[in-house]
Picture 1 (tube, one colour):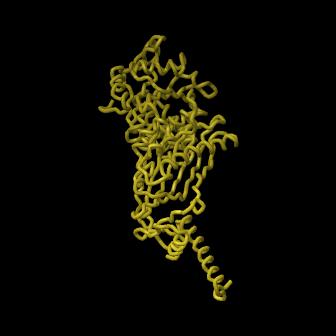
Picture 2 (tube, helix red, strand yellow):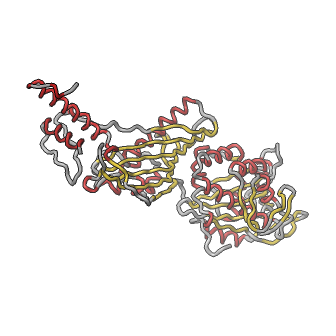
Picture 3 (cartoon, chains in turn brown, yellow):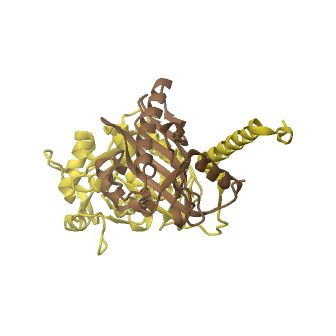
Length: 199
Length: 311
């Protein structure tokens, strides 16, 4: 592939020592200096209120978006994204209510990337969104149903890549420590992706 | 610019620089935009696995549902309780059991002697109703919900009507064609109200009415469970509860409770109506409930909201 060939030329020009592709797969070159690092920016969570049931002033809506977004982002980052390879997903459920954590751990294979974690070398986020339906009977937000969708590609080295989609509903209420997930109804699907031409 | 016209050392350096520049661009493309290098396999079948859970402590909760006969304009807590249903829900297993208590049950009302159980509402509100039911059955409810005619109608309207399976055919001007044996689509809230209030047209009167209330409850649970995925369905329902039912629960707790209720599987919903003899105390027609049966049901259902062995 032209891209691969040129990448090898570039890497040899910059003096990297190991550049050989493994199993027909191109390894990302290790930068020789911090200035040469090329990283994709993390995809931010797209959060939007789709409907308020009751009434909720705009500033409070904005606060709901921030608070719920923070909670869901923390879950997505600790449960699916972040550093790999790893087998430890203990911190995945810090955004869940205390009573929900045992159930979530039981469903860990579906609620985190634990199934692929050990073989995953890196993950690349493709979609990360939450659409919020807010219950606010008295002008104060009481509960949120977040329809979420997280799509990422888990790069598993020789084993190839897998595109994982996690979608469904997260149920949240506000506690002293912020918005917490007290319920979930999510589905997970994983599809192998083939390497194709870069052109 | 054409590279073919350039010669000498400067020209070779220029070509090298351009090659490196091109390589950088392509390398960035490879590193930063990997999707171009990946395409999805032509999978025709994708396995989708799912997980559900709702945190509600305790996992087994008992809810006393009261239908007040207060007329429009009168506070619901000023009326008698026409409908008295004690419902257990197990949020872990999806099981539920409803225990129907005839409104005319002549029982001990804590601190007020013996009387019809539905007078507890007028004497001491939902709290005393809860104590009377606990005293009679042996299960203290965790929550009490009270609704009046209009509240019930609005509640049914907010979920788009219900389907009930009737054991008896009976007529009412508000139900064109009457209620027939088998499935009945009750699209309007008032039709559901009639179904749950009609007593005189039924062979066993108050007992059959209580059973119909349980059929309506089953219809509500089925409707809620079948629509829980619809955006805003639960929020709209809870908003309707806040506006139409008397409860001292904060909306956030109602929201959690509503989601916990969606865990009930209609196929695991069991119901019993406490039976008893009919008689008179003075001039008042009353039901002398079978307390032994009530406590037997409660003893079996209390731990996990299941009812092995039937009524």
